[in-house]
Length: 158
Image (cartoon, rainbow, N blue to C red):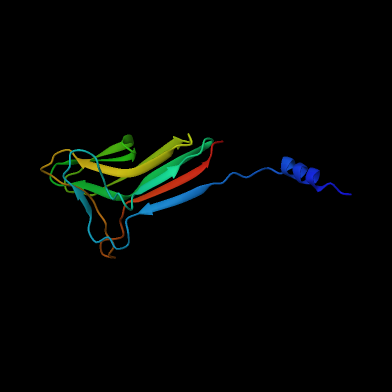
């Protein structure tokens, strides 16, 4: 009589288990017709539906996030601040000093896994409520295609 249970256990013991790596992309919807703008001096989500990602990061994994592929401007001599948030905590941010010019930007951050749920959002604010901070959404060939994009890569820690 052949005992297959020992063979299966032996195969699992020698065969390396491959950890799962996942990637997610979040971007403004194809139906978006206007740029994102705010005059708020406190951080507000750029697009809480399309530029937000809720995920549980298992212990032993890292979540790497990138936001960019967009430009930002402040009207007049205004400044805009863009940030990646985990719930109500700012992870990283950058100030855009613009005088009616579109300035490119990018943000990157890594969250180590702790088995908890995280909601990551792209947020922005103006430094003066008299002026508007804007993140454009251009989709015509004349304007070029410019839209905010967030990418997420979850992989085992090495």
